[in-house]
Image (cartoon, rainbow, N blue to C red; front, side):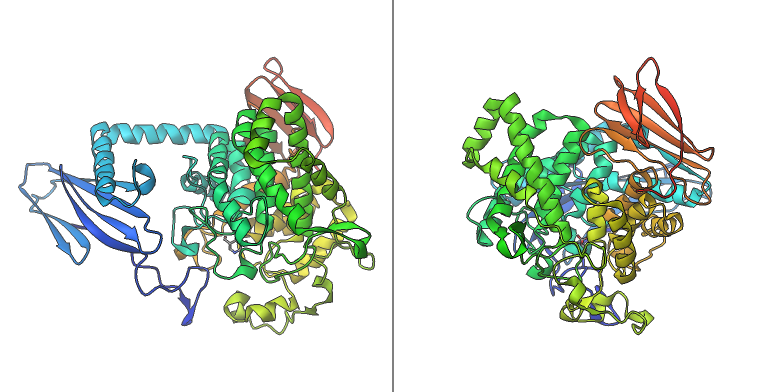
Length: 623
Ligand code: IFM
């Protein structure tokens, strides 16, 4: 029996001989280079370090082997060109059992006190972690893990009656999100979680706009930790802003791990300024659901203020647009369109960001003036700045085309040449693998939800019929080459009462990895799409919306389902929502002091004395 430890070789990143940019740059060398062996105290392993960033990781392992019948066991370890092979040989009598317990512990620079780059310290940290795990023992470790998962399902359990495959898929997705989310305040949620090398382990807006809503309502403490990571990397965002020519404020990098921008190609990278508003939206979502003022004054407010400043620095009041506040030369979420003026999503999210930042500054001024003074002092915030944010938000330009009655994705999108969908060979998808980006940029073709996402996140901002018309328009020009897209279309289709479409998109996002729908699950799981399945269920089919601090529902029932239920944590309460085929929804307070919620506009109060309410009405076709 052989177990092998070796520096990782990058996965094959080609399709038909063409490099797939979604995996990462083609490097001749493995990302991690061997530094030294670990040995002693029953442990063996190795220290590895990244070539450029010098970040290190140590892995230490130990084996215990037992056999029934006490057959002699010969264990050998062989080091071979940076790989470690542990071999166990024995001869077992028929029916005898060999048990091998392999324990592995990792340590990274962040686990080590002192100067980064110290291989000995890293090695000792891994050996210490291994010793600690061995001392605790397998049964106790397993018990702790079981308990942690039981706790997780207490807050996030869900069921879909009539679609067991989809129920299993969403539960699988939730489990993967839980596994993939950083919880130490030093890490976030990678686009692939911890499951693969696609996108080089980087964090994107996927964390805040997709993973975070799930965590906010099922694991608030983890949501807070993920947001703390952004506060911890605020200095990197300030540096990035200066690099991009902004005199003050912070601009979060489009893709990062340590806080520095790691995009290789700025039109599809740093130009996605909406990342600032995405993070602000996540802060707001967390605050509305938790009321955690401690987070706000330690971390959240500084993030909000520093990032809000950027919009004032880059946007302007445009006399040619009636003095509206315009934002030029950005890329929105849709990566088949780049470097545009007045991207609807960016402008609408920036508007919400500016408004909220001004609101928070005003509330802190009233309720926690010392905290506001401390934060303002630390970042040199002028007393007049929040009023500037409020005015820019009020004047924000949101593109609307009178002739078609839709919201254009940006100033130029409707003028572009239509894409020849009928003439595109079936094997030319995803388009990014077959057409030069400039060709895509010149056409009316969307990789993923863009304006459609704005309608989902900020429903109060748009008129219902314009949203319905816009949905039809964007559906016809979107190819969903990004896995982030289907969940968003499912969510909006459900809110619009387009139930067949909603269900089809829901399947695409729920089964994305279990069925390997994009044929690249081997590069890692698609965390945002997985989160998208929960969002489509809860925020789409059940119509949940909580911005502003009130929990609202407008449940629908997709065709073929006889019911569904899920749980949420909200403002210290745990609530179960069960939508049934009898056109009724039951809301149950499982824990907490109680709350008021809205069901199709009807207010219900759940209290410990009256913890359950069943309300009639399933919405079928209204926003
Ligand atoms: O963040 C996404 C982006 O929106 C589409 N391309 C992949 C990225 C990582 O998932």
